[in-house]
Length: 63
Image (cartoon, rainbow, N blue to C red; front, side, top):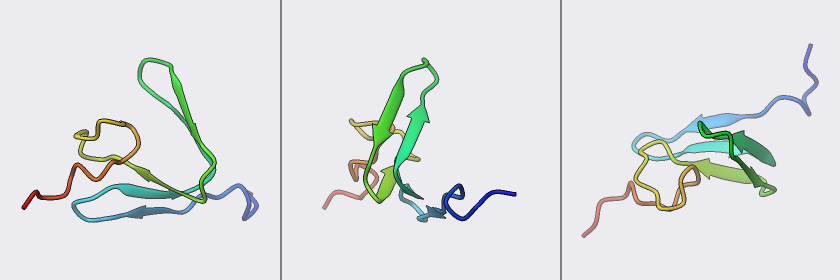
């Protein structure tokens, strides 16, 4: 049984990123690893981010 410290909360933002409680370590398709020690990490779900896999708010509509 995982302890509360082992469990990560993920929040799905409609039309936006996935918010993951940090710190996180993400392994990408090519085997590279992206680490973030922030307390909440925004993970891009639209693939428009120039900082993919991290969100840079490219999903927002331009006015």
